[in-house]
Length: 118
Length: 236
Image 1 (cartoon, chains in turn brown, orange):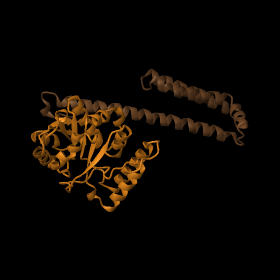
Image 2: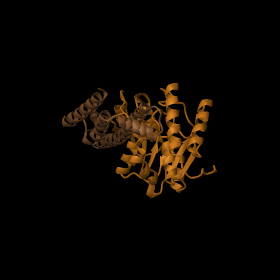
Image 3: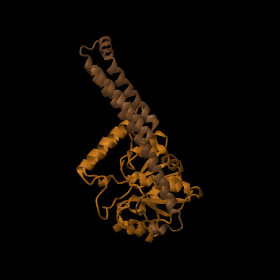
Image 4: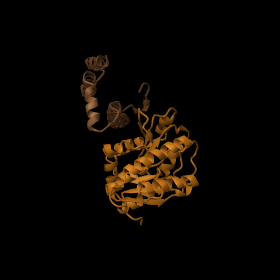
């Protein structure tokens, strides 16, 4: 039963991700990481023994902690990447706004100062 | 102000946020001290700052996104560079900086002995502020007394460096800018300046304890992460 639930979770996440890409809510390069996570979910769901074997190798007495630890690490990395990307976007946005301000100051009718809706 | 021909085109940059009340007086003060063009970078003010500044004769760069004091100053520096100005002086919009100090600020740049000159106003420091400065100095390893002064002069080499992308994410015109300058081999010098009390309003950084804590935490992280990996130089 657990196997089916995990596999369904993995497959439905994959379906949702593809749906989001299809409707331009997610860029393919971001979808890549999420699809990988969905595949891992599905694989672990279909063959839960993998986690037990891995935990055995690493000498971890309670295998589920390994699954939780891997999940947390994956989310942490994804989140960090998100903040890194956010910083890059911030640089682009600020430089664009700076250039806009400079161009605006050079317009012949700079006196209007119309920033409504900006 | 007598400058050699290479530095003759200087510009005064004033970053401003909601300073309609004092901005005309500040611009007039700068006008009395020098005949450089004045550019006011409006950081998305809600009040009449833009109109007041235009009326006082400044060129206005209106930002459409609020980006803080440094973002505004960098806008001014980019304007300076693209307009062919060789030297830039930054003055706060709250009237704290006596524009009469501008010639003294430019002297080391004219003499070629410094790339960045800071108007040092350390006498304004209260005890907690002095403590904060000491902490920031030790974290950043900068041999500069007044890390947060907004009264500064930049020469062409400094302008070229500070208009780059790598300086865009800085939030304040303080130790992040100075550390970047130092890491790139620019010479930083301080000139003592008598500071006046601000005409009205509160400091944007020191308006509340929460803001002070936020500022200190961010600045310590920045200072620590941007430290030179070489051995610290001794203070001269």
